[in-house]
Image 1 (cartoon, helix red, strand yellow):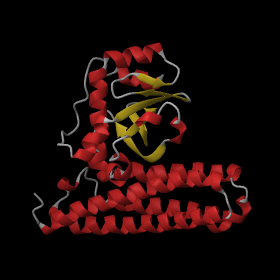
Image 2: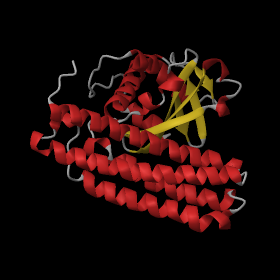
Image 3: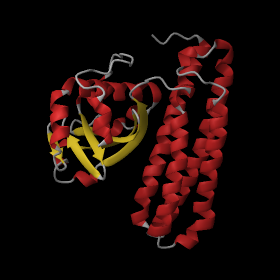
Length: 294
């Protein structure tokens, strides 16, 4: 119950340490149609935007706490959505799903330590949440610290560290789930592992050169250098993504359909990261150019 114990620190309060933004239609829809899923042990407890429990065996203490702290969880939704606006491109990357009138976004909170959470995001049709919940679509992940909104290195550090963790899990799953594991090991699995580690190592080294938490804080004399590094990291990620696409094609040719879904989740995070790097590069280009955008 570490999840609940963490939230109890904010009992009767609201989160306030996050920037207020004016929402576009896309972000407003994501906020208004956000469902929380609290991952406690191995069970998921899904709550509607009005905090009615929809799935999972009720835990009276959790249900009672949420019922008494709706203002806290409303502010938590804003905290998370605003984090995505500042430090991610997940909402933009998945606008195809999120703009559909019947679509909702599911925010699965996984407690890590202290006030740190990993969040996995899914989308599904509202009317199908009860009957076909397992058919929800994974759209990405993020990492938040409830005690500190701002993130060093433009929020990139956790993204890259996560890719290393995901690669380890991915390699373990391959051993158990791939029918033709030996056929794929050398040319693809080993290459993916090598590429993941090298890409992350190179990226983490380069982001040390821009420790700021947002583009607005980067000194003007450092803008070009920062942009060059962002574009370099982006190119590394694109090469990594293309390797994953090639592996996926081979999996489908060999009818390894059950394993493809694990690759798809991994690839999804890579694509989200590339989209965020592009978002950063646009911001840097505009700041360098002094071109008015509003």
